[in-house]
Amino acid sequence: MIRPAVNGVRFVVEAACKLNIKRVVLTSSVSAVSCMADKDRPTEGKGYDESCWSDCEAYHFQAYTKSKTYAEKAAWDILYQKTFEKEFCPEIVTICPSFILGEVIGAGEQTSASIVKKMLNNEIPGWPNIRCNYVDVKDVALAHIRGLERPDAANKRFIISKETGHAYVELALMLEKSLKETPYDYSIRTMTLPKWMVKIGGVFSNDLESICFLIDEPPRVMINERSR
Image (cartoon, rainbow, N blue to C red; front, side):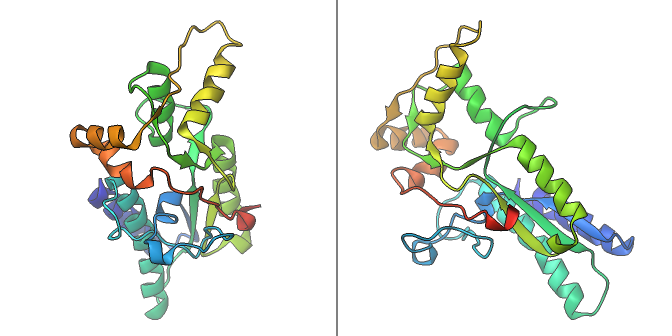
């Protein structure tokens, strides 16, 4: 996952350089922003902004976090190198959405949508005590359009996210409540799993093992002033 993501970004940006494309808008993630080492995290009362970068060596992050972080950095590295060498490079805009909720178009697995799918299918007995910030998919789409059209967006990162988040269990409860108003007969599991159970599950599941460090962490505040 990591190498294809990084190489894909490099190929696109380098091709844009050769073709004199004015601007490239890339989809990154808050996973490239907020997974920082303890010593580098914002102090209490402050939040994560576009100056923050995830430290992939600080924790045993899942491949998704590493791929998003290294891929976005690859784009900025090309921009800095071309600027230093006084060669042409397109303007870079990176969009960093959080947990994306909303309509899904097309088949295939989407990282955020897969969580909702697991809730609907009751694929796991409950949910780790992890909080996540979220954003509507239509806002993410609009951010990409604005990133392409607005002159003042050039060479900037944009966090696209609600400032505060919800625990997975809270999302499951909201989903359960909304489904009661429809003819669909879904029974959503809304139990919070204890940390010890998640750690045991992590022995058998890479997904669970990779998020153990997030359990019981304080809420993350995502500063989204630049994207407003």
